[in-house]
Image (tube, rainbow, N blue to C red):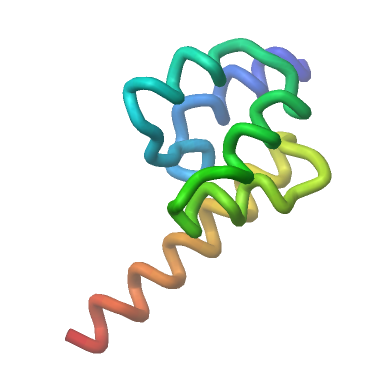
Length: 79
């Protein structure tokens, strides 16, 4: 079901980001539009990339996880 899929992707690599203790409560269970506006003001490129997304769905999360993994593998190979 959609809820099972959503629950599965919530705590995955593609849905994780870094925020300050002050920003974290303002994200919480708010709407995507609210979260997007807050993340757009972040100094971290990691968060601005998320804010550039029109939607934040299970598919977006899985795609981001694949992209982050590919970047990590490439960086570790180079070192």
